[in-house]
Picture 1 (cartoon, rainbow, N blue to C red):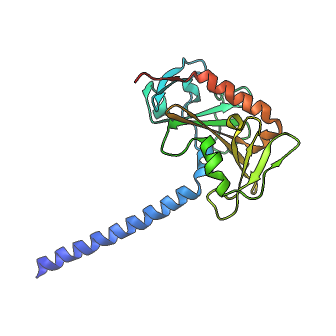
Picture 2 (cartoon, rainbow, N blue to C red; picture 1 turned 90 degrees about the vertical axis):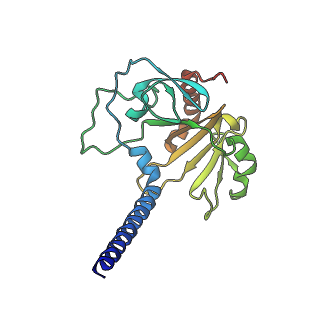
Picture 3 (cartoon, rainbow, N blue to C red; picture 1 turned 135 degrees about the vertical axis):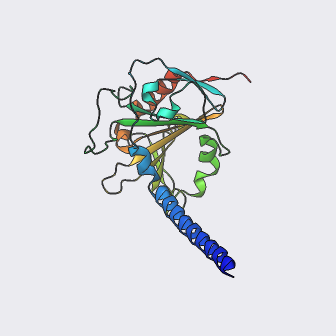
Length: 237
């Protein structure tokens, strides 16, 4: 009887710990999801490399890229060869990696107003950006788009949709090159814009402050120059 009672107590204790772990995991997951956009932008930089370090040949989704290691945000991604994803950061408007001699202090507040963030990842099952513009986004947008004096078409997404709080923005004369989803300003956190391109089997996502759209031609030109610098080419099968 004593042995059976001991076994039962252990089972009960095990279930209790399992329950606590599940609750903790759920809370952490919820917190991570809610803070993902801010965490992405403010994630600490790894130990920087020399700005003149040679570019690394990295293949992502079967596409070859030449990427400066000083721009790669996470140390584990600073290696040549096939990878599922790399995360990059560049200073605007120079499009250079951050100065390795500048070491932020623990008391410094992260500033993203002069940073352009790039993610290159293997393409998934989602539709390419232009297909989404034609078939997905119209289901969630509000009234007809408004073309402003700057030549950009702006159309808000409805509330209670997957894109609430965002605007769909692009140049009607060349939407593929300029298609953006931009958050609206809330509080003091900078509103960000997102531009996506599919390059063969790789998806490229660029994030930058919405305030830059005051000179959106320069921003789009800069993104084009940056992609050309990577020199993406199809990998042999």
